[in-house]
Amino acid sequence: MFRSNIFLKTTMVAAIVAVTGCSKLVEIDPPVNETSAALVYKSDRTAKAAVSGLYSTLSQSLSQNTGLTIYNAVAADEMQYLGVASPYTDLYANEQDPTLTSASNSFFTDFYAAIYKANSIIEGLTTIEGTSAAVKKQLLAETRFLRAYSFFYLVNIFGDVPLVTMTDPNVSAYLPRTAAADVYKIIISDLIQARDDLGTDYSTSSGSRLAPNKYAAAALLARVYLFTGNYEAAIENATLVLDNKTLYNLIPTASIGTGVFVKDSKETIFQFGPALSANNVYVAETGTLLPASYTAASITFKLQPALWAQFAANDARRKWVKDTVVGGQSYQFAFKYKYRTNALAVAAGVTEYPVVLRLSEQYLIRAEARARSAKSGAADDLNVVRSRAGLSAITSADNTVLLDEIGKENRREFFCELGHRWFTLKRTGEIDAVMKALKPSSWQSTDALYPIPQASRDANPNLTQNLGYRN
Image 1 (cartoon, rainbow, N blue to C red):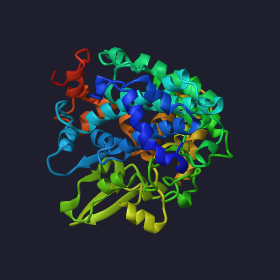
Image 2: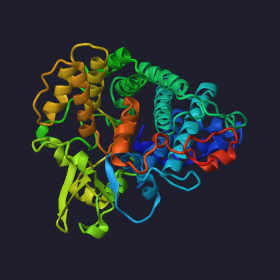
Image 3: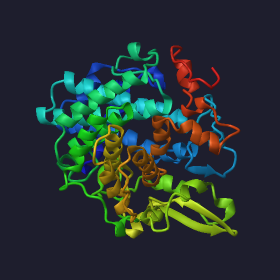
Image 4: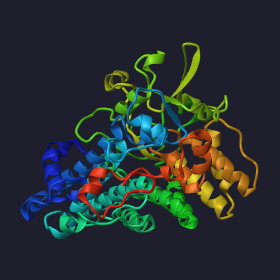
């Protein structure tokens, strides 16, 4: 949906959508009137601009210095925070305060802001005449994909959350939390419809992988089915993606350092791009992960030593780590995205966009689902990822051994990447053992969920707090 010919209208239309899809849950004003919505959906052009605004909301949340990658990596066993007192200090100690403004608060409000926009778009497209049938089908499918994506992150960060699928603030403003299992039902429903309605290529985004297609919906659906224990469906959807050798291939081992996290990589299934400019949108996060100068005083984040130890000397993914010595001490930094500033990236002629879904995950999803359901082929899928990393094949056919190796491969392949490790530890039930060993004096089981922001609870008295946090 990122098309340069609609950027000029995006801000105006997005503002209308933001107003027509709001709730007190995120402290935004209620809808204005039906006339504003009618203006948005009177033509294909303005309807596309509305959906472009939804992409903008989500891509901006990824590019913030306290984005999904950094916050969840610090909360998990991936990164250590060495900076001055800040919300990261409490996060690293797993002692978040719901009354403070922090990234965990913004996750809640940002994803709900996106969901409200999505609901408004779905309502507008389905009730207001003016958009052509083909464009309406495409935009509804994209919007449902993005709503499912938003709900997926909410349930994995906060657990049970309000299930907001309407635009009427009189209904949505005071919704209680819905069980995560029921939220997953909406996620699955949205993704199935998106998968069935989206096209098979990237023609709607001018060939760039900046809008989901059928395979992106299937890829996210495969992940969701793995998380919910429907292994047969996870295998089916991952296979749908993996069988498309025309669109998708793993980057060769020799190019792994610089070829994966760039615009339109053959390994990319879906990535966010900038909503209103040609900038590299991930540089804000990269600039936070890498020190401004390699002096002890400038180092804020470093990889946990146990994570770095997971990479064998011949593992090509070591190129995703910046390894250096400062003051006689070894430090490692996440280095998947190579440029600290947009100016440096532009000067190098490289466009780095945040990758949301990539092919290697589908191999590991199918491998795990096959192993957990005692089906053949798990080792083959695992070894595709290992071979690309330059590692030898796993020859064991024992599913217990394979699951252990798949877990290790997941850790190496997706370290410091949009919360993969944090969510996986919770999904597999390993989080208490892993985090208690790392942080024996501070870890409690209730730390697995972030606190519900107090401001949102003040606005909605039916919104309960997660256990372990002050009410």
